[in-house]
Image 1 (cartoon, helix red, strand yellow):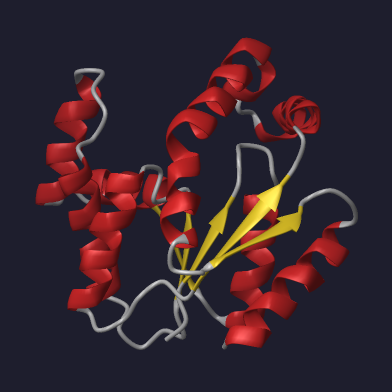
Image 2: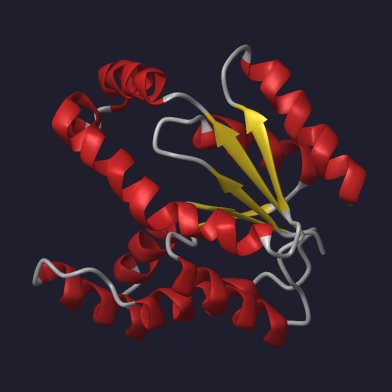
Length: 191
């Protein structure tokens, strides 16, 4: 099993590249946003717990999110590996994910980080807002806040995995297929 974290700031191209990687390698995509929506829709115990926090304007606690990830891993034992997208977002979540994966006799093999300059991220999110219907992408102040949160909290995830020599930073600018080929080369070198 090969487990991958696709990493980068909002607008770096993670979603676009995730789809291509899933199609090529047969990874099971684990997006915590998708998991939350599914658990809430199916009214599972974890989903109802998450909804109660969300309804009160609170962040869903890490323990609840990790529980959802655990359930998803347990339900997908035969996959080639997992592609984590948008999770972990903090060092504490990364440590919890490592512990969880250990209980399933697996670990993170590689963190591929897409590097894109901040001004390009803003341009991409404005462009994405025109086609995605995501109102948060159209507001430059929201974008700058999301990028600040990424720098202040999420970058610690890459630092955590760098201590285990698992992080490769790649240029996220340029042709989508060229970037994809770079990602594939890194995965193929370690698979």
